[in-house]
Every structure is written in C-alpha cells, then in structure tokens.
Image (cartoon, rainbow, N blue to C red):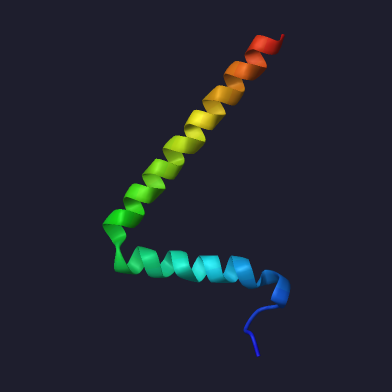
Amino acid sequence: MLPVKPHRFLPFLLTVCALVFIVREPEKAAAAAISAMHGIGTIADALVTFASRLG
C-alpha cells in the first residue's frame, strides 16, 4: 500500500527525489536553485515590462 493517495503520488515522488538530490549533491542542488530563481526573476521582469507597455 502506498503511503500517499494515488493522485498525490507524483508530488510526493518529486519531493523525495529533490531531498535525495539535496543530501547527495548539495553544491549542484544550490546551483540549480540559484539558476531556477534567476529564471523566475527573468520571467517576472518580462511580465512587468509587458504589462507596463500595455497601458
């Protein structure tokens, strides 16, 4: 029997994989997190620029 409900299995699995990655490769995990935050910031800046040009 699964420890979580079937519709919540994928998020549970991704969380476990992320935790294993963080524990086994902390430097790579930190670099990936920084890269992801930079990407999110770039997207946010683009959306703000787009919205400001509309009106």
